Image 1: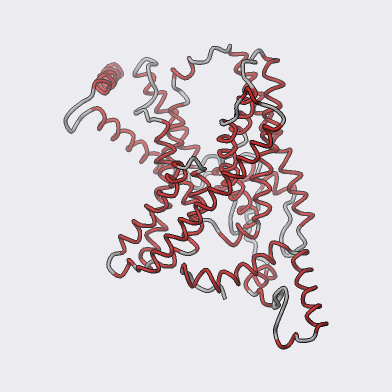
Image 2: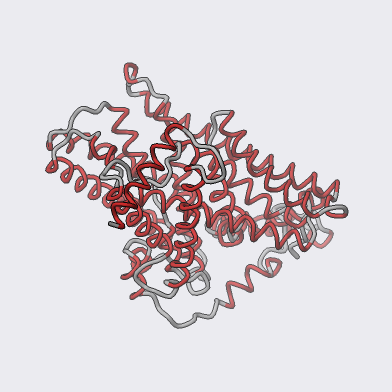
Length: 484
């Protein structure tokens, strides 16, 4: 009886929503209230399962979404599975920007840029390798299971879509204090990987199938490099502009609200401006977040620093929970399942092929790039990426949790000393003009030392000279404390 009444109420609400409602208890308001209540349920459930090794908040939101979708499907007799239906533009315009911006704003810049070349190798070159393997595999295997209606651009698009990864679950397992480099690599590769896959997908969409020749690959690469470079420059420019305005006007002397509002609006403007110019909003807002945290964040009052940090993190957290909850409900959408005309056997075969190709594509670049990175690393202070680390970043949460060491590891003293006291290793510029080096032999020796250090430890050397340039030129203009 209760189930019948609930079904009748839900059908009446859905019908009223289709024609519109008025008043404070309109169906739209009711749907929003129910969806908000379910979001709160996800937050509470995630908190209660915080210490659980088998599930995390993302999985909790997915499960709750599936349960809610199943209940709604039963109440509506399979007509729908959503509390509310949202346009796909909602995710790209409102939900995605806070997640990506917070990723850049909260990133550990020191670890990120120390491992920048390795991260870019995984996130850029790795994506190209994965796209090639997934696309070629789909092109070869799909017709064998009776699904060969796609063209070359479709196969390339599939490769770009399935080469994108989500590192949320893995990052919740890895302890940043115990394995800082592994955490930095997984986090950085996840962000760069997503941005690269999106940019590459947009470049592939612009391909003309009738003119697909050997030069098409070069066109895709050139379009990718153009989008990657221009999006990054746009994000850095907006971040620097925000920092300069905050430093020059000092808005906090009258109202801290204006400081917080300006940072939030400029971050959102960077994303929307990139979309307007048909660039990558993900890359733009990510690098805008990095620049703002490096310069603009130091130009606001102490209370605004705390406020911005927690506001951006909160918005990102709510947006992520919203996405996982909606995906859980969307998985049971009957209409989407009915659009496929493939048989059950064909669907299972396609599923197995894609899973196999995704795993093969990941393995094809993770292991070789890890080995190459370890061989090129000339510093004994840095822990190499071992096979154990690769397994940790590859397997599912329960296995990772079981294999991770639980004891605390003290950070390497040599590493901290080297990073905090660069002058101990690098006290001379490339071509010194000091009075102590007036002799030609001494100058030549100093130049040899500097160049040899650059060749032996390129990332560390570039980092040292960047800090000197940053302290001397950038921070006096855009703000921020001196690094030494």
